[in-house]
Length: 120
Image (tube, rainbow, N blue to C red; front, side, top):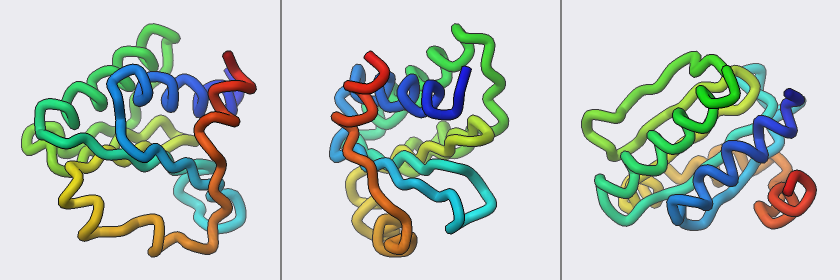
């Protein structure tokens, strides 16, 4: 599975659970942490948890290793590390507070529709 396939798998899983305002950031050349960050939010702790669990489930269905999954207990900011793709699932309030999109504003953003259409 390519990194782009992994990215598409994650974005589709988020979309399937109605993740809000999905933003994908191309981190190559910007951060050594991952090739892509995917940022989304849910409107409740229950939705944040459902999004995170769906991403984990889909990754495991493809035999992919979830390197880290943090924050699931509080479901306010869940980080899912798939090595080359890191997913940030926020509760809406935390997303506004931390504003990762602004923090990493030098990264190119990729519309989710482009990712889903290329790998559908």
